[in-house]
Image 1 (spheres, each protein chain N blue to C red):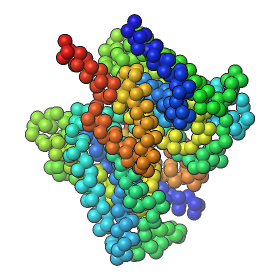
Image 2: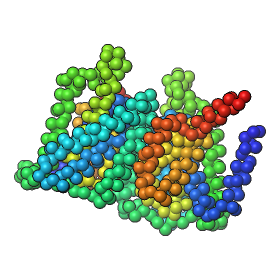
Image 3: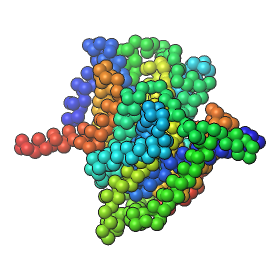
Length: 312
Length: 288
């Protein structure tokens, strides 16, 4: 019952945010939601599956490009375009999973990185399709049930709904018995295999599921920005999400949300003062790994339990 | 016919360049079990050092420049290994993330120092005249580059197979705990190999300069090529990265010439094929 008491004010705050915050903050919150879905989906791989992917931007970028191409070039409506986009991105995750899961550990990391670099290169060079370095502009937001999402507040609520669904779905995923077997495969793959589980299949299903939610975040991303550029497929984009996961605390549900929010806020505020975002990102990486290797949320929890024990 | 021979020679020279890039990566991975994602940035740093030196002193020899830039990059790599990587010995994921962070820092620093425009690196004067091969005119420098890669491969082979240091490195690659137990200073070997690997990348960056020129994003272009070469050839195998470099050199050159827009996908087909049937790579002993 304790968590309901904590969650109710939070839910009320999130629901009512557009009524007291300015447009800038509402938009910032929408961006945080998108980054949070993206980081949560990566966390399924990194935190719960022990598969560190450096190519997760593939799913965000490909979903964004697919939706942009289908709606602007082929004139499809947003509904069918969204379905094709998510199906396509999930299918791509299934193919990439077959390739990348031939290896584990560093090999997996290198293959996912290489695959995403290929997509980035394609987005840059196939300018006949993707418009290359100019990106694709002039995109529109969908109108679910006839409601326009063009105002910051309406898009915020839309993103809030999608993010809540995504959060709950991923929470169910990791707390289900399948989630337990995933954690088992992460920690003891050989024992799990001996117990009759199929570690490869468990990893592959997780990989596809993570790709699916990565695609959802990409769809929201392109709806929000109404523009797509090859940088959203770059290693920097994958690395930002990974930093969010690790900074917040991988293998926890709240961690990636906190981490993604921090990375996004840092990016927004830092870029107002300095131009060197990539350098700052690199330094933050060094700092987090060297000083806070378990992440903020586990570190904070540890601190709180320590304090509670101390006061007793 | 002319097309095939010229492109074939181009492939050889790209293969040579890729070997200079990937051999160090493979060496570091083999010994340290570390995917050094800074490797592309080290290569780019070498190119920028070379571009600056060769453009400011016109009489400078490219070989001396390559050696100097190699030593400079090796020193940076050594510092990074000693100050940061050694602290993360028990945390392989942390090590990879730190090398990724370092690559962002280096590439952004290059952008800050040298600006966003691409800087061409002059071809050495005495190698500017074209050579005739089978009656076809071909840039001499590119042929020399193949020779460089061969020389580097032979030198590395002798270093690894015929010297005491090489024997210690091989022992560390095979079983680093056992090597420690018999008194081999594996931690020092880590530093030496990291310096060596980044040094080769830096020198390779200078030598590749006249073909590629220095530009921001060079690191992002080269790192995946290095990854593909070592995944294809087998991680930690010198022969693997040698053969892999030339395979990728051929595929990339012909792919770009024949199907310019699809070159990037074609590049991946052999890797996917190899991973599907031989996950440890063509010449690798163990899967990554």
